[in-house]
Length: 45
View (tube, helix red, strand yellow):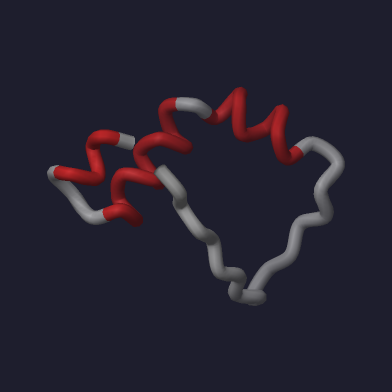
């Protein structure tokens, strides 16, 4: 996520997910999918 120093946090997050899709799939396995519902995420150092 060091990329967020050069681009927006949102863009850096999207890039990270694209580059680590297998990891994201493993983390979210079994989680119900929702559409149209906003959530707020936090990032900590």
